[in-house]
Amino acid sequence: MEWYWDRELREKARAYVEEHQLISVMNDTKWDRFRRAMEKEMPFPPAYHLKTLFDPPEEIRSFKDEKEVWYGGDYDREAFAGWLYYLIEWVQVVPRYWTMEGGRLVHHPVLHDAEPQLRAILEQYRIPYACRDHIYTIRGYLPSGEGLECELRR
Image (cartoon, rainbow, N blue to C red; front, top):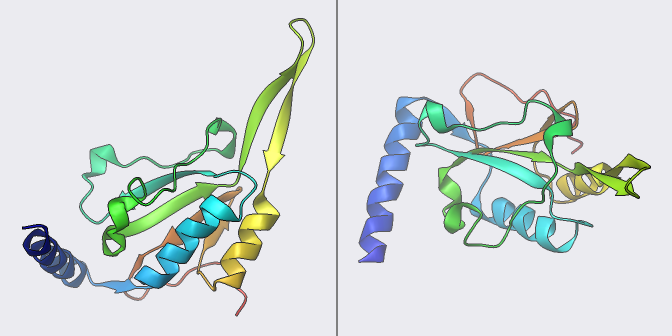
């Protein structure tokens, strides 16, 4: 039964992509490399928000500011889009987070930053991205006629 459901979902996704004139810029191999690298190659799994093709506008979450991040991301294969990579429209990743360290009376914010490692991974696996204010956007699809204003090195 699962195979039949997946085929119907793929057809629904294909129809959505055609109707909205989207162009695929990622494939399953790149998404899987990205997911595994976030799990295995990063010093910590960075926080992320993920938007699928079918997420209703009122449920879309995105980062407004990199300072709002205080948690890590879950990149195991069940949590990260359930391996249905063809449904991912975009992922926003913030490769840094803040903690408060010190004693009760004297404490200070400490930044944990893995931005250089994330950039290296994206470039190593040739994953297109855009970055603004330490928030990295990896797009699964782009509207036709729109390019990535990214720092991608090929």
